[in-house]
Structure formats: C-alpha cells, structure tokens
Image 1: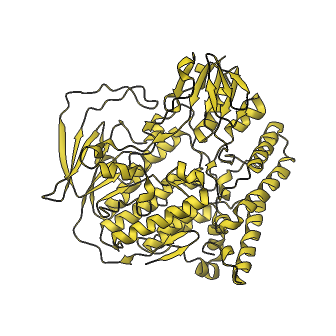
Image 2: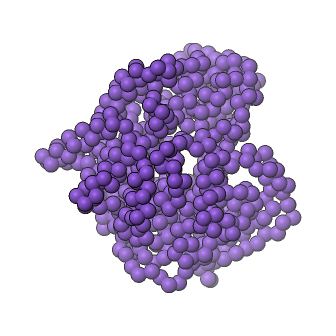
Image 3: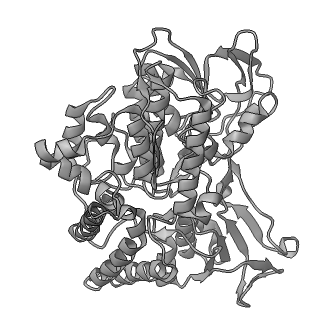
Length: 564
C-alpha cells in the first residue's frame, strides 16, 4: 500500500496506458492555480472551461494592495515549463510583474480562450442520470474598486447558463472570504477597523496611530508600509510570530536560495538545532555589514527567532522582515498579548496601552465554497479542511471527478509549484495513466499525513489547515506519480546537476528529469543558470545531514535523513 515514515505516507501508484476517452473539465477561478492546471490538462488532450469573476487572470494579485511584493523569489515561484530566462539573477516580483509572468504563460500555452471572465459559478450538482456535473454560471459579474482593474458595471439581467462537465476543479484560492473577528470592546472603539482585504495604500494613515493585528506576511509588510506615514504604529500577535526570514540577505542575494534539498533532507529531530545554529551564524555575519540599519534588522530577526526557539522545520514562516524593519528603524511596538479596545486606545493583557486611531486586521481568510452549498454541502464542508483530501487535493468520494488546487500551504517555499505537482497528479489520474488506491486506503493515507503535519507544526497546523513542508509534500507527490529525481544515479553520473539540486533553490525542474512527460534537457538548462545557496548555510546544513546519515547507518532510526 505504501511506506509510512516520520515524514508522511509515501505511495507509488500503478501506471496504466492512457485512456483514449478525454474529459470535459470545469475550472473555477482564474488565478495561477487554474493556469497551470489548464496547461497540464490541455497537454493531455482534455477540454476545459474556466470561470473567473475578475476581468483578467491573476487571482489575488489583481486585488491585493498597491505595493504588493511576493514573499518567494522568481526562482521558487516559477513553474518548470516556463522560465523568464533570468534564473541567474533572481528577484522578488511585484504583483504587476507576477501578473506579467502569468500573462506570458497563458499566451504561450494558448489558455486565455478557455476562460470566461466576469462569470460567477452559482451552483454545482451531480446529475444522477448522466453522472455529469451540472454547473450553473452567470455572466456580467462586474468589477468595482479592484486595485488592478478598471471598474466594469455589473449586468444584473445577464442570464444564467447551465453546462455539463465530467470533472470539477476548484482553483478559487484561499483569499476570497475575509475572516474578521469581533475584538473585545469593539463597540466602544471610535476609530476605524478594516480587514487587510480592504487595505490599499499607506498614505491614508498619515499622522494616525495605527495598530496592525497579525504578523503574517501581509501583516508584516503592511506594518512596515504604514510606519513610514503614521505618527505611531504597533503590531499585535497571538503568542509566537512566524519564523522570520528576510527577503534579501546582507550580501544582497535572495534568501530562499537556501530553501534547498540539503537543508530539508535533514531529519525533523535536527530541525530546531539547525535553525539555532544558522541564527547564530547570521547574527555573527551581520556584524560585518556597513549598512547600520540592515545590520540591526538582521540581528533583531535572529534575536526574535532564537527568543521563541523556532525554526523553518517546525513553524510556519514569515518570509519578509517588514515589521522588524519597522521596529528597528521607526520604533514600531510589538505586543504578544490579547487586548481589549476602549474609545481611543488598546489595552493589552500585560497592562500596556497603545493610543489608537485605526486598526488594520491581517487576520486571514476562510475557505468557503458557496457553489456547493445547495446540492453538495458535504463537498463544501470537506473543502474547508484540505487534510481530508488525498494529498490535500483529490476529493476522496469522487476521486476522478473533483479536486481542489492551491489549498496546501508550504511553511517555506511557494504555493504555485505545489499546485504544479497537484495538477500533474490529477491530470494523470484523469487521463487514466495512474490508478488510485481504494477510497479506504486514501482515507488512511490522508489521516496519516494529517498526523504527520500536526506533529511537525503543532498548533500552526491546526490553525492553518493546509500547512505542509514544501520539500516533503512535493517529494510525496513526485513518488506517487513516479517522477522523483534519481539522486544516487545523478551523484555518480552527473555530479554537477546533483550539486545544483542539493544546494540550489528547490524548484520543480528536478521532477522533470525522469518519469511521465519528463523534459530533462530543459530542466538541465535551467539548473545551469540557477545560482547556489550561500556557502556558510550550506556548510552548516550539510554537516548536520552527514551526521544524520552516519547516525542512521549506526542504527539510530530517528536520525534517518529524508531521501538522502
């Protein structure tokens, strides 16, 4: 059935000849997840129709605030089948630059003609007679006050249309329905409270005293932006913030060059020790920087991480240094307590106070699927918790017909590449080339995977339902579909490529070297352009990895590396 281990449950599926009968697939949402899924399905001969409420592709990045910058670099965000050719000089894309990448991808693979823009999916029901999925959609959705779109009036009289499909793929994203709690004392607070969904630019807070609630990646960036204009800022979090990683290192290189196979091949038991040693090393190196502010920011990041004893192995990440920069350079306050609101101030549980004119709540979003509510509330309910799906994607009750994409959330790493792996898995299943195990077996695997992620990430995994380890999750799908890179063979026959895979950024090109629809020539070309991670961090993680290998060889199974 598979192999259970401390890193999850690995199962390799049976390969079969392709089914000559092709399917017609409904795709809900027009963001990055929909695009890579369409590309995979169309390449196998299936037909697709995509329904998007916005007038353009891009999903959340069309709606996000003005100065949005991605938290993973161009290397980790790009897909294996489309490159900007600039791997040797990676950067962090702005929202506009990422949408440009998506536009170019869509044009290259001729995807736009399959998308119905300004269309809202109203209901979905399975026809008991035909077995088809009947999807009712309405055009003329309209667009108003969206950051990167012109206003388009809605057409309330636009007719509803029902279409039949063989499969339903939900790519609606996780940022559509905001979660805004009611804070204690909110009724007497005289200031403004907005969710980050409605935040656009920091200038509107000029001269105000602003509290940002939540230290996720948006909260961190927004705090930094507002602190440049507000008279005073504070950020409030519940206990521990995410493990902090700056976008750019002191040497000017993107930090996620060090999100590599060498680091995450280490056993979980070494994770926090690796994190602690790396923080000490980074703090030491920061002392030699000429930029005083950058030096103090990087040292403060190390202090905060070491204070809460977290690492990238066991804590969700905050992959930007925004709120720390605001603390160090502009005096932003950090509060780790619950609070109560009064007329013009916030009182924290430790007795400290912050006079406040406005609150920006970066309190996340809910997974909601209203198009399933009327006829299939059980699917809507299951969609709220990706852990119940096979590999957090395939809905087990209809495993060849319904799947969710983009709801697995790597603690470190990037969502679009994980969706590429999910798309490859589902496309091969839909094409008849992979035979899924029984529903009972898939439920068992999903349960074991859930236990693993909750053991690894603790409270964070229960709060962020789709939280996964980037490498272990992608490796698991790679083994399932038979595309895991042959590391031992590469070490012997192509050591330069092996070195790039182990010590360069963790990209999906490694899963194009062997197996179904491999493209090794292209993969190797991209690896030749990719830079390696930093020597010091690589040396630290490699020393732990070699130690783990020796200990496991001596019989200490707890120290067994992940696929090394």
